[in-house]
Image 1 (cartoon, rainbow, N blue to C red):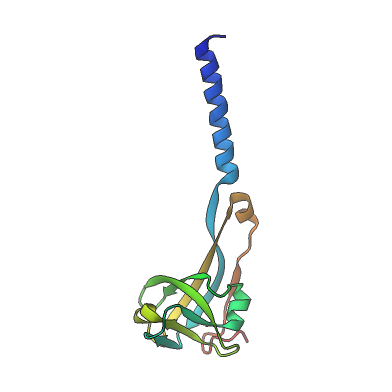
Image 2 (image 1 turned 30 degrees about the vertical axis):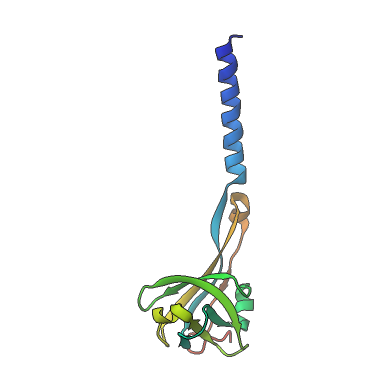
Length: 141
């Protein structure tokens, strides 16, 4: 076997190994949870930051305190990211705090989305938590 043949085999073997690792170790962002069509109940510009969400909604959507949340405002098309903090249970509270308060108005309809990073095979089997609260009062009943 010539030196060139050895290098060719080594490169082919390395290429397959890299492709295998790429496919097995690749991670993607997938929707972890979604609270669909909640109404903004408040906007507090003078708070440090975040979005206050009724703790019942957080539990139903499997969102933890401090988790990054993407906010989609159906009324004006704005998209922003902040972190979740729990509000009083069974209150229906959805309050944008700090600078994010400038992106909403009370009564705006929002979609709240969180994401997870996982391997492709996990993602194919994963089922997100989808929550559809009452659009009038943001409650689960």
